[in-house]
Image 1 (tube, rainbow, N blue to C red):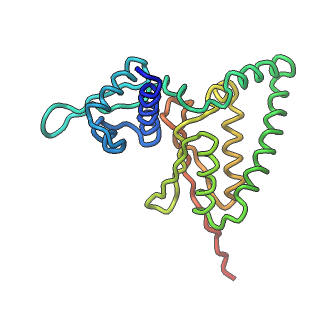
Image 2 (tube, one colour):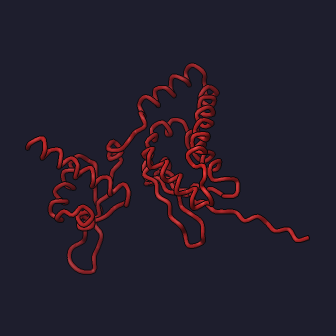
Image 3 (cartoon, rainbow, N blue to C red):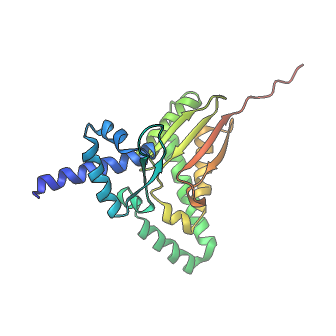
Length: 222
């Protein structure tokens, strides 16, 4: 296979993995329609990705015909996405803990969180209203590799979803990263919203998701 052909194959497989990360499990025909490829071509790529333990499938019964294979990513697929220098981060956390204890880690996280809040406040300046703020937050997190999504729910609240965590390994050894994430979102979205984590990667979920509800001030009669 020529270098050009190999590059094309790699690009297609990356597109498949990216679609499964962004939109969740789907069958080969749906993937093919999004990629303007034939179902057979996509299946060939999927089986090769399966041999690399990047994807796996579950069979789903259909009203007519044979069950469909619904493809989804494995944990191995995380290697295809930005990792935020995880090995370096984990190593540094271990060194800080050995030298300065948990108090040292907390001090580093506090400083990092303060800088992050200032950065986000600047990037989100000019946003008016919760919907606008969430759209700007979505753009920031996408640029940082979180594969974010904003969903507006029927009750008027929002679901802010992150389908990939580029610092997952670091967060697994130091839960302060996740706590700071909640504080960061609260800081940039404002005290008038309630933020609740409803799905969590480190608890075995396939994503992190936050329900964000705008609180209405109580009207006190005269």
